[in-house]
Image (cartoon, rainbow, N blue to C red; front, side):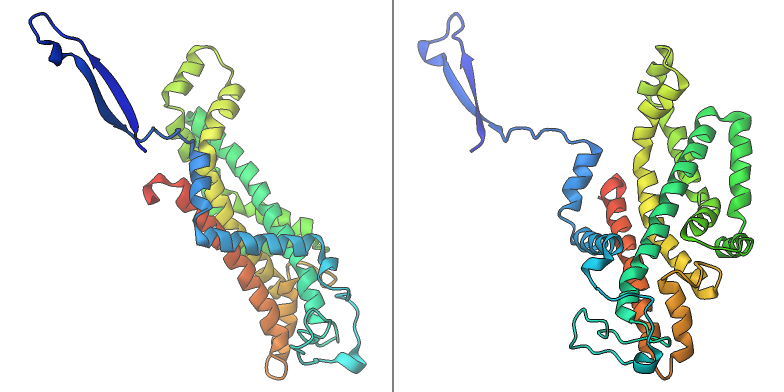
Length: 319
């Protein structure tokens, strides 16, 4: 029921007694409590089927990468060439070692799919965190101080932008004899921070002109307090959008580098490495190539859908 507003009308001199009385009008529904950008975005995300599907897939992949023993008891490195050489998938044996067949070395493809999620997720999340921190710091410094500082950092960003991402990663990784997960993260983060730096710089240039930032300067707030208490919280939205969308790209980059033989070493369990080994048996055992390729595609697609949903929720222009 709508709220009622009761207004008393007093009789003026010369009016009849019937003029005075009470007027009851409809005030309409009570005003909703104002929501912040984040609460409003969460309100929209919960009602977005694209976000819900992507979130479920991502949670499943995270659980599989953290606790692979929950999904299989088989080892991804145990090989039996005599009995399992290029064994065909047994679709009726759900979650069994032979469910998805065996590779050229007689190893369970299902076990390698489960354990391979750890490398891909670790690289994707690790690179995203590294480039988010590095790019945000560089972008904030360039956008806030301006002048020669902005010119120097912007030109440095342009130089790194001019380096082809995969080609630069190939050159960097070839300089290491042992390519572990952390080496791959370092190489991709070394080249991948530029986009977030430019987004952060643009956001800071806009926000530093706001009244609350000008007031904080007038009150004598320190530079660090202005940057981290006033500017950074309001610049996080576009940075988070770019980071979530880029995460899927970093997972694809790791798989591509491993496929080319310059990513994770041969001892690591990696989807990209399994795709590289499966291409040699494409005609006689296509499942050795198709299954890890499908896992890479599902993972990348999940993070891209997640980032796209977050972008739509945080960007007022897309509402």
